[in-house]
Image 1: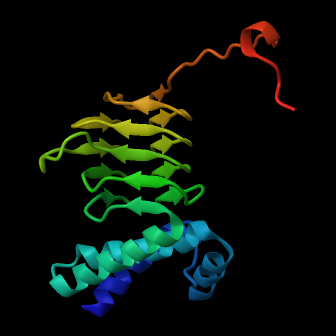
Image 2: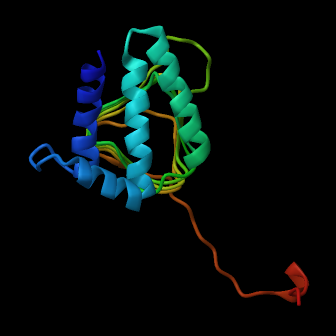
Image 3: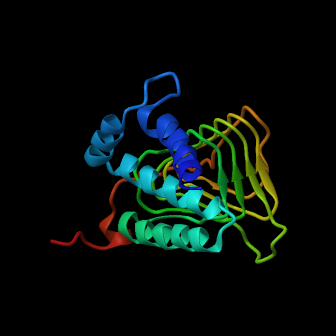
Length: 192
């Protein structure tokens, strides 16, 4: 059983830390990259917790859950176990990321800092389906019940998404930025 857990985790590490299954796997390279980068260190431990939780054994599920809770506190990233995430997970900056256990995420998912993927309700039949090659940029929030983002969707920075988006689209919230001259009568005096 231990060999199957290690082999499943090793495949994720090969793709997500080494960079590709085409490149030769080296434990030394994995540990060097993890030592140098929080991104890789988080992915290493998250994938181990992910694989442990996926086992049918109650003991291993519990170990996976405890490990995930520990790295959530350390890295400020909460990807709940129960979410399915295909290989190729890429996290730009491991901070402020929250992903619900109801998410089904495809391969080569890229996410930037301070993003939330969550649900509104508490029902167990809710699913957030995110296709392959999706990118979610910084400070974005995807919250809905039964939402689907197709393959190769790009979510712009600072966006709030609560509707499904078809494959191959870019989605963002437009904002108008207004710049005006400072007026003491309207806004008071500047602090000194």
